[in-house]
Image 1 (cartoon, rainbow, N blue to C red):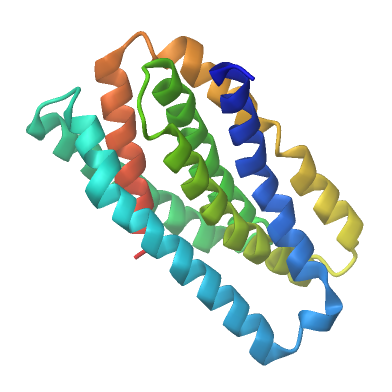
Image 2: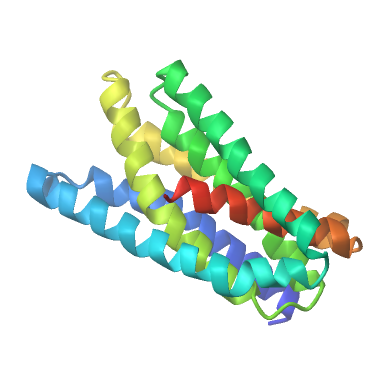
Length: 204
């Protein structure tokens, strides 16, 4: 299998963590309150810890290889401020799909970064795919819980099918990053820094 198809496979598997998280949330026998809370909090803490470690040790330094310190700091800050703005809008909307929207606003930019990373020969592509999967699993879990609670008439099967239909956004975004972003190293570096700022604030 060529590296290109490995990239597509990784993006697909990372996206598949969304419906997998929803599927876990839909299993009735693990729905007692104490187990539900323990699972959700443990996975979020584990995934968030890994993500923040990667931000500090891998992904921000990777962006700094393409840009100087000041643009990286500005892009990082812009990502954090953008997340705060989206978070405020989602909180005010009181929508039953706010967690789903938040999950996609994480997933799509990171899939773009995955494609750009593979195109430029970065060694962080495999790590980034793993981090996306770890992030999507608890977010898929929470998105399912929110949608099933906020839409009493909505069936579990329909919600899981919707989440399954979102999986192809991963490979499509990865292809966009691979073919469109990769020829512009400065844009890739700025994009990495913005994503890392977004992720850092979202997991605090």
